[in-house]
Length: 185
Image 1: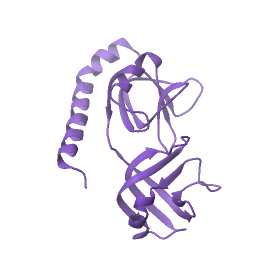
Image 2: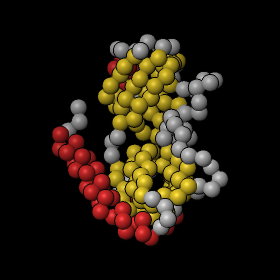
Image 3: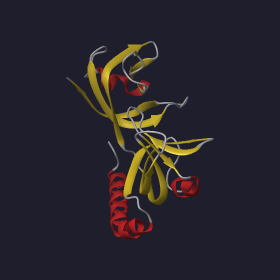
Image 4: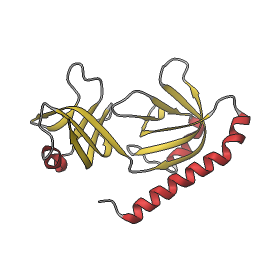
């Protein structure tokens, strides 16, 4: 169970982020033709720069090079991050935005959900990875397997929500390291 002080801190931080965003929207909109948006997802850092992306879903948010220091001051690569600011559409890709003017960034232990057919093999439990299941893979930490199997059956539909981190090998892979809920159909 999450510590009440930690929960209060995260809620306060998100509230302050929203208030700051509401106060600053007119100023930012006057400076640019684009609108205020926010991106959230797992923060990735590589030779191409910073980006936020969802493990099992479409969409990517690229952080402009000039704005990277603002994001890195608040968010660590491999952790869930939310960035608010002026966004422009990418010219060459659908479901892609470029954060050109970052107003605020906040790191949080956001819960993410993995769902689909639950697979069990010698490596453990996972969603995805088979033909027709999309590109993303979601692993369940070995310490959390008992919680999932207490509700779900392998090779059947299952939904697991919890704290996610990026897999060590990167790519479109996430691992739920702390399960908060499990449901089946």
